[in-house]
Length: 73
Image (tube, rainbow, N blue to C red; front, side, top):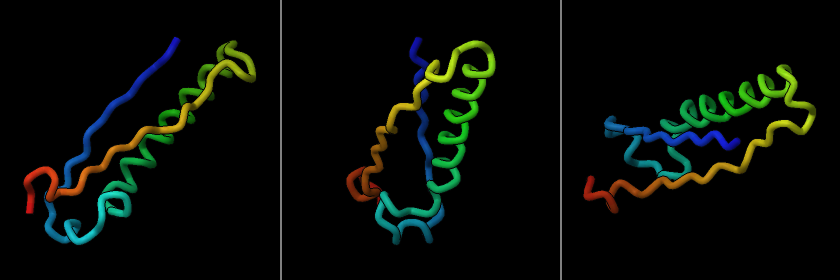
């Protein structure tokens, strides 16, 4: 079984527009949320009979376009 997640974060405070997308601190909390969810899901599978290798966390695929590429200033 594969469990997929997808999310979109939006930043509308001008202070965050000065950071490049890959280093924008506005996304740190969102990254922690999703990474924590994966860790907890893996633990749940293991604790409920999934075995030591019953769940694998795949590397995330992150796409953070620059605001200018989206037509934002």
